[in-house]
Length: 344
Image (cartoon, rainbow, N blue to C red; front, side, top):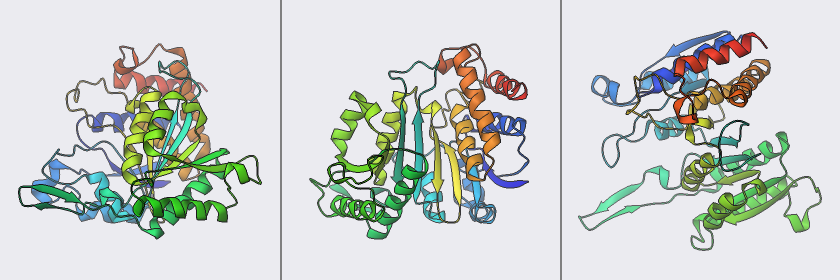
């Protein structure tokens, strides 16, 4: 039996998290869901979009999964996602990007993971106005954070059988901040015996680095060349969405926020208020996030059942949500997944 904090979110969040819970239950995992609202709906009552009791519950359970929460643009409260990462020191954001047979996308056989430092860079939120003339943001890159995220990326690359670990940076321009990130990346890789390709002792795995603008271009031109990419916060936010576009969009991509003590899994897409309540949202992203969560807690058989069910439903192409070219509802999609799991 597992106790897991659940934050359904707003917009389509309640619909897709309900679908996820049903599929996880069908896979045979006993979970006590401890459910909490966050975001604008609790702002008046608690004076914050992320009340302390939610943070305390996640710390106690050490595990959470959440749906999308709307973040006001240009005003209002800061992102709940950013606050969770800071409060719980969820230093590593992990986004596996994979193609599914049957899902129309621009590429086949994509298998890329974006690993993003999750707590600093421009997302530290250290910014201020200079009168009415300008706004200034401070980019914070520290050696300890660079060491932790690079070590995480090294471990991930080895554990998952990838060959190439690439640092993404802009050290040619930001020589101090991104320069530090790149220097630490090279140091940690060498300590882990992951060497540059031209000096590599182990031909099965190597490291290199790519300037962020070149990375963006090459991810579009030749995405199959990449395996694992590790980078500071802002670049990771942008490139992970770019990579989602390679495999069918944000509705297909899961995400994990990993810390030393806690982990929070989430759908990467927004709350889509324009379709909320219509029952047509695609729950794949949060279901894929639940697969990551189940593997994190050792429920590998259940995770494989759900992953195989997704592969089957996409390959058959008969029960798909509107965004995937079908006409099925969220409930019909999740019911079909449960049926496939039962019959597997």
